[in-house]
Every structure is written in structure tokens, then in C-alpha cells.
Amino acid sequence: MKINGVKHYLWRAVDHDGEVLESFVTKRRDKKAALKFLKKSLRRHGSAEVIVTDRLASYGAALKVLGAAGKREVGRHANNRAENSHLPFRRRERAMLWFRRMRSLQKFAAVHGSVHNHFNEERNLTCRTTFKGRRAAALAEWRQLYAA
Image (cartoon, rainbow, N blue to C red; front, side):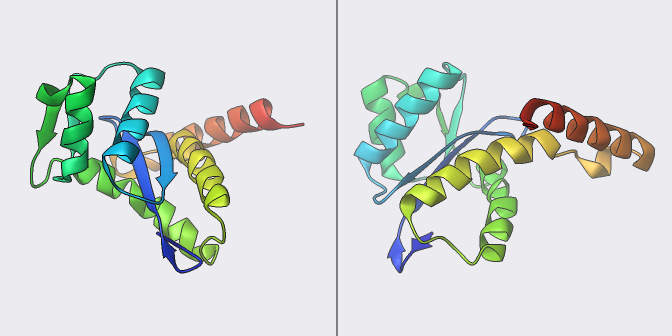
């Protein structure tokens, strides 16, 4: 992602259902950043049976430090769930005409993940009436929780 012409990296933890658990923005994509992200997400969500990543060497180095190198899984299509979770975020990002500050990107990424998880219904798996009912229930719950 670019913020004022400077490249930044968005790290995302996604569970097996495709829900975004954690998002983190850094200026670098090195071992230190990977270690910070993995510590944060593992502390918050607990240890995972398998950690699927891309082939970036920073992940391997960070997981060695954490003692979870054996849990890492790397494959050609194994990372698709995480990559597909970027699509709604990218669409919204383009509509907002990008970001100006790293802090605003971090705030947006954190909120967008929870909102998307709450309202994301897999439309292709349900009939229209069921989808509409679940969507209305999610909206009612959202309004009840966050109405001031």
C-alpha cells in the first residue's frame, strides 16, 4: 500500500473461515515486523495448529524465534484465503481515494475487518430469504451494540 508515495505493508491474520482476526501496518517487511505481528496475533488469539504464510523468509525467521517453525505451511494456493480477504479492503480503499497517514490506515484496517466479518454472509451458500433475514439480524445487532 502506498501512503503519500511511500510503500507500507499491511499484515493480516485470517482464520480458516476467512474472517479477519488481526491487521497491522508497518513500513518494512522484515523479521522484526513479522515477529511483532505474529506475537501480537498469537497473544490475542492463542496458538494455532497451522500457520499458513507466503514464501517470505521473514515469516520463517520470526517463527523460529517463537519456536513454531514446524507449524508453518507454505504452498502455491494455501495462502488464497488471506489474499482473498484483501479484496473488499482494496475496493473500499480505492473508493476513499487512498490514505494520507499510516495511523489512519491502521485505524481503518482494524475497523474494516470487524465490520466486514460481522456483515459478511456467503451469499452463494444460502437462499435469498435466509440471506436477507441474516443480514437484517446482523444490522439490528450492529445498531444495538453501537448506537449512541
